[in-house]
Image (tube, rainbow, N blue to C red; front, side, top):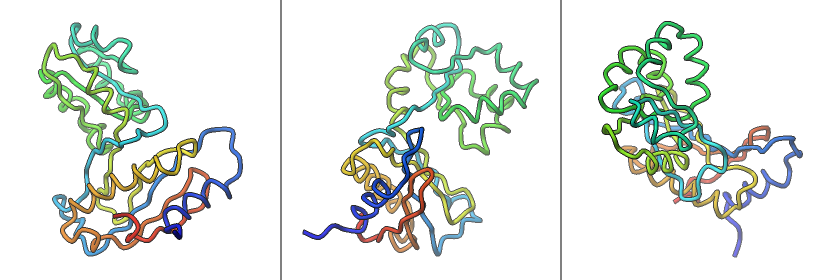
Length: 217
């Protein structure tokens, strides 16, 4: 059976790329068409749990009371308390550095209003408003899922990128991740695949390879 365009693209990316001193990510670029992205309700903003994970570290930060902080130790990468919020608000430059390092934030629900008021200007544009958790809830399962999650976000641009894996992952694992993303994406678009003009995949340092959208269903 002949290989489809996705199989050929993955083979090309892995075989033709130079050896790097770091593990390259593999990402997918999606170009939309016939979507009015000036209207926020038409923009893509989804969080998708990949069936085979991201293949690389995901940084998660938790903001909560002493009880939540205690449960988060050893689970989250960064743990902050209410006292840290005022410090971040006073030093936005430093918090921007933290926000750029962290993939996902979680915050105790009772602190969400304060987080929004003090840090919303930094986190909002980055699509990193925290996920709320009830006071006292064990955050382990939420963190575990977030470590396998990617954010698919178009904002107001017709072209956007999403992580689908790394070069170390098998072609089968990457394919399953891509198909999971495409299923969710086309399910959200008004015309499904009719709103997708083209799709490319590439490694961090490699060239983009086009994939037929018909092979992504």
